[in-house]
Image 1 (cartoon, helix red, strand yellow):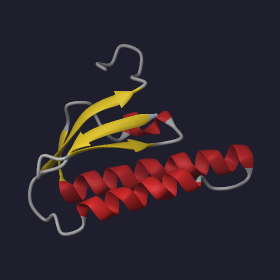
Image 2: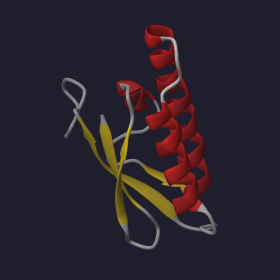
Image 3: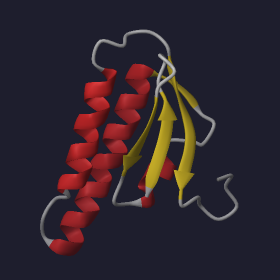
Image 4: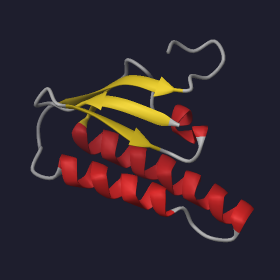
Amino acid sequence: MHFAVRWPDGSEASYYSPSLVVHDHLEVGGTYPVAEFVDRADRALDIASERVRARFGFACTSAAHTRQEIADAARGVDDGEVVVLRMEPPLDGAPA
């Protein structure tokens, strides 16, 4: 799945997760302080990676890469909020 966010500086980015578990940790339209967003994304991506490990026998390097991308984007951003713009695919009945 992909999820798109707007960082406090107005820049937008799209990130990848190998699992829909991100829907359990972030909400479309949700606004999170930077540190909370990073924590929620980390937890979701850890779970996603472990689901890949359980199925295929190895952790997901794409989830690790996404975690690093988010950490790099958050570095030096102490104030402001991250807005979740989209999650694709959406869960049934969830806004796109």
